[in-house]
Image 1 (cartoon, protein in one colour):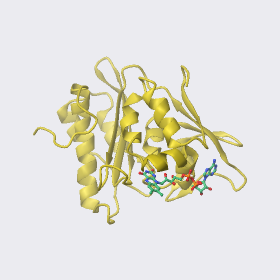
Image 2: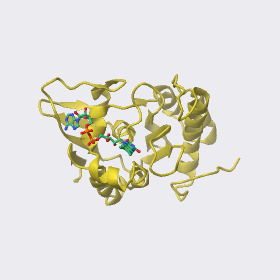
Image 3: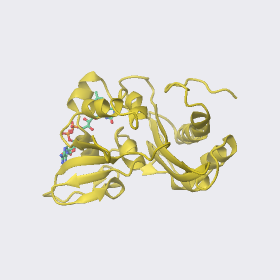
Length: 227
Ligand SMILES: Cc1cc2nc3c(=O)[nH]c(=O)nc-3n(C[C@H](O)[C@H](O)[C@H](O)COP(=O)(O)OP(=O)(O)OC[C@H]3O[C@@H](n4cnc5c(N)ncnc54)[C@H](O)[C@@H]3O)c2cc1C
């Protein structure tokens, strides 16, 4: 951890990433989310490199990495995580290449960081839908929005339509609603949730960004939002 951000070795467990985030104000909004990754045992054994290597669409570390434009350091090169995740459980590693470390750039000062996980059980469950957003502001409007979703496509993916709908505008209830309507996903149905439910849930999470912006005191877990 330094001024540039957090660098974590591929073989470090999730608990190390959790501790690094919890111990750094700029990354602290991710701590609550990471505390819901698997169980205590999984967080002690599972690794950030393994989450990446699996390239699962519901790997919980991946939306954080995408929303921050993390860099994957391999034995051969550095590459943005967006280029690393190719397709359903497919990554860009060559046969003789391994992941060495991951660099998470420090978010811009004043950025809104939101990490939300929806799962059938609150704890010890894999995501049905997960969203991590990093929204940067300049002059009262959104200068850059990065909104990454797990569980909405074959791989963890940025919601580029929603990001574009917010960019250059104030983050209000109305613009957040427009961004939610611009979500460009065709999710699958499985036992964790139907495609319709996933879309409705994802729209709700994007809409809630304005609430998180307007009410930073809102707790990480919100079970009901005022109408
Ligand atoms: C009970 C249970 C609950 C779980 N809950 C969650 C959850 O809530 N959220 C979640 O995201 N995941 C969850 N998982 C999945 C867990 O996080 C995975 O085990 C993890 O993603 C894989 O990590 P690992 O370190 O065990 O990797 P491994 O199983 O060792 O490896 C996974 C893949 O990545 C490759 N790999 C690993 N390290 C490297 C490297 N350095 N370079 C190149 N390739 C590499 C391996 O070759 C393999 O293909 C859960 C798993 C269990 C068993």
